[in-house]
Amino acid sequence: MGKEGKDYGSEYHLGTYLTEENESLLNEAVSKAMGIRATAFKWKKPSSKRKEWKGMEFLKDDQKLQSKWREFWAQTGNPPNWDAVATCVVNGQKEWILLEAKANHPEFCSPPCGAKDEGRKKIIHALNKTKNKLGVHRDFRWEGTYYQYANRLACLYFLTEIARTHARLVFLYFTGDRFPSPDNRKCPASEQEWRPLINACHLTLGLADNHLLSGRVHEVFLPVAP
Image (cartoon, rainbow, N blue to C red; front, side, top):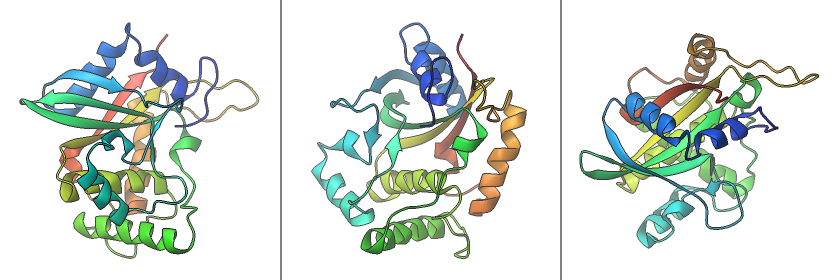
């Protein structure tokens, strides 16, 4: 999640869609992006005072999965944080929706991995394992530019291929955001303005258009809610 203010920022706009008035619009957009009719959306809030879920804690009751997660990803430092988490039903099967929201260019270009020592080695090992399964050449560094995008893919790989959990990753791109002066950061006004940024990310990470997880990675473009 990026910078938030009153009436601007991805956190603010996501909050406006996760209201009783607008939630159906978000659900419909996610379902449409999946290309499969999804029903019974339930957006889940963390049990603590925190705004976001961390790592795999939304599945904390699954001890077998938690054990595998500890083997896969570093347990020190700050794990991947999810802007929103939901469940839905697809063809009678419960599925998890992990959502990452963006509203402007700077927050889309995330900083590199800040982990150190053994934690960093474990994260890079997990990223490399994901790269290998997705057909990405080993020379593409996932711990640098667009590290956040990369670790989200690694989390999806863990859930679907290691933990054998039904899950999907949704990147929500808001259009038409405006930051007050003197910030004036670039905010794409349309899907067409987002595309070059997304394409640059995929090229930097060495991602092909079709890979092992592409059928479970979805893009949603929504205008900022009034």
